[in-house]
Length: 204
Image 1 (tube, one colour):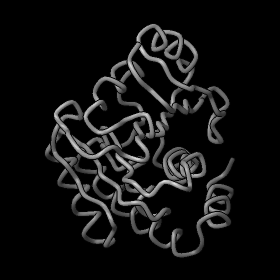
Image 2 (tube, rainbow, N blue to C red; image 1 turned 30 degrees about the vertical axis):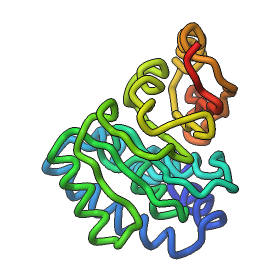
Image 3 (spheres, rainbow, N blue to C red; image 1 turned 90 degrees about the vertical axis):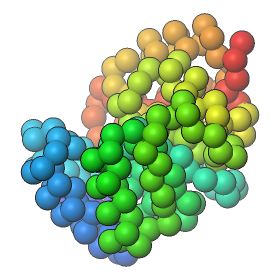
Image 4 (tube, one colour; image 1 turned 135 degrees about the vertical axis):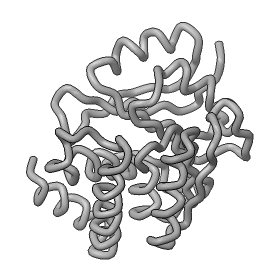
């Protein structure tokens, strides 16, 4: 898939305004990546596929009937948190424990006037009303994510968790401790990547 293909996929689903906002975010992301390690340098030329589309593809997997918050664990560069805030209407909460990265996220939220907030803390310390959606991209194992998210997720929460080749093995491990309805969606951006979608997650 090319960068133009990725832009077209996003525009068809989310409109031209989303493309404009993503272009602005991309410029901020690439500029900040010169000062701190936000994305791998090898992916800079593929930012629309490897990062923007990779994040935006999660949104159609989220429930449309639920109006609660979208909470993104370990947002880092804002992937998928910033992208979710741009392309869909839920309020987005980004949890990022590293101060420099949290500062960058706050600047993006302010400059793009997004309906989002940044919490500079660990996910395990966060206590909020249950989220409609919880996402996490390249942060931790499924077992640890479910544990750390217990302060802001309940049976109504949908978990959207991009994984690479480890998706199936992580699911097997997580099911030793957690009940739930789990399935795996193929990623649009890499043949060996998958997205774990989980609902009704609870401890055994």
